[in-house]
Each structure stands twice: as C-alpha cells, then as structure tokens.
Length: 198
Ligand code: MD6
Ligand code: FE
Image (spheres, helix red, strand yellow):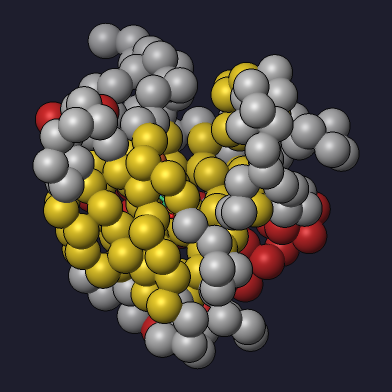
C-alpha cells in the first residue's frame, strides 16, 4: 500500500466536495444490501464513471446505470482523474469511482475488492470528512491485521500484494473534521474494472 497523508489541502477538499455534492444530486445515495441475507449496509453509496459498483439481493456487480433512477452514472471529475494519473502508475483510466457515505455510526466489514476483471491496477482511495480507523490484513481472513487512521484529504493506494488484501473500516470518529456539514465521512475509491489491453 501507499499512503499519502493530507495529499489534498483544505481548498482542494472543498472543491472536490462541491463536485461530489453535484454528482450525488444527479445520482442519489442508495442503501446497498448483502447478496444472500438482504441485510442493509450501514454505508450509503453512489458512483460516478462509466461503471458503478452495486450490491443487492442478486449479488455484487458493476453496472453502467444507477439502480434506482436507471440513468447512467455522472462522469468522474477531472480533478480525480488527474490524481489517478499522478499517483496510480496505471496508464489506463479507471471506469468506476465508488462514493461511500458514512454517518457517525457506519462501518464496513472486512472484505476484498474482487469484482474487477483487472487486478494489475491499484485501488485508489480518497477520504473526506471525519477520521476513520482503516484495518488492513492479508489475503486470507485469518491473516493478522493492522489498523491506522485515515483523515480528510488522505489518499491510500492498495497495490501489489495489498490489492487483494482484506480491509475494512472499524469506525468513524465523529466531529474530528468540519469539512462536511454534519458528522460523517465520504470515501471515494477509483477502480480499473475491465482488462487493460497491452
Ligand atoms: C473506506 N475503503 O475507506 C472503504 N477498498 O471507506 C475501501 O473499501 C477500500 O479504501 C479498496 C482500496 C482502498 C479502500
Ligand atoms: Fe474496499
């Protein structure tokens, strides 16, 4: 993994947040649920880019339209694509940017990002708003884990052996940032989904 603490200064965070607000107006946050149990996630989601990640009773998948509005996802903001170009080491553009919104009590269980068809590109993650405790393990559930804090403006790349490592969000620390209007956190993850043609 690679961690870039405070890669975005406050002005850049505010500019990006404005763009995310506009995206979420067009593609509203929805509550995904677990494929078999139908249990709701505590995190709400939306996406931008040609593809978006969704989870419902039918499974996890990438699809080109919003599950409620049926409309195509809004484009990924050029500012985000610039960060991807600068940091990812991948010439191909990401097709998907998942927007995760955490209220003060939301968390995300340990998981591997494995619905992509290409694993050579890293997963690029950018955090806005309140601090969160991020947990990173190994490629099996039994591997030991480490945790560290992600703060507003931080960028994290999961690459190399960590690309398929278990990870999750233990908790949010409400009130540690005043970027958002209310306590909570936004995490943006850009993914390369389709195989990169050599
Ligand atoms: C989050 N992040 O930070 C959840 N996945 O809210 C992820 O699930 C994640 O940060 C892959 C790579 C980086 C991540
Ligand atoms: Fe993930």
